[in-house]
Length: 116
Length: 113
Image 1: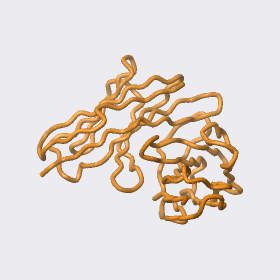
Image 2 (image 1 turned 90 degrees about the vertical axis):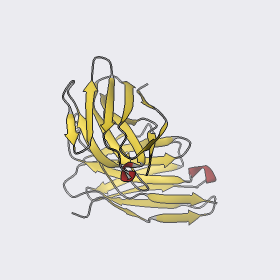
Image 3 (image 1 turned 180 degrees about the horizontal axis):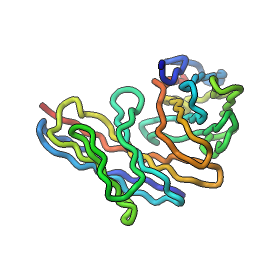
Image 4 (image 1 turned 120 degrees about the vertical axis):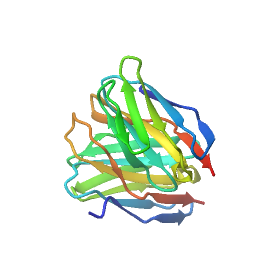
């Protein structure tokens, strides 16, 4: 199994540009999580999907952030317009289990985003 | 609001020492507590604990959960330089939206030769 796949691994962009981060969860996993990690704030959960449906997006910082999961094998996290304070490592993780249960999450390698 | 607090924030030991990392939590509808190790890249899973008093063990690492006092400890015996990492504690709780995972701030462990 290839594990959780994220792309790109690194992204450098200028303030105001649109950024799209991509994630392919482990096959058979039906929960997908987007996290952001910074030195100042640590690891934060942004949004969580179960069976392709967004369950809780209370961690999404503001309207500039949006996430979609059009099918069980693909999700995107979009930032438009990007700002320097969005610079962070963005992790995608997946797990098994239905809403109402909890299982181990497997993390992707992360996307390091730098907004200049 | 759910809260997970880890201590100490950082720790420096020498190879061969034993360390104990702490994680305390305040969550509603607790389901599980997880320990992760994060080196330079993504977190990797160590343990998941759901029941009090049952020790989970993997080599030199072990962990136990106390659901009455709301904490967990992660022990590492005979530490090695390869144990140097940030250790993250996360608590899974069931809320109205479903499953939520709240992470602590981590303990940064440095093992010197």
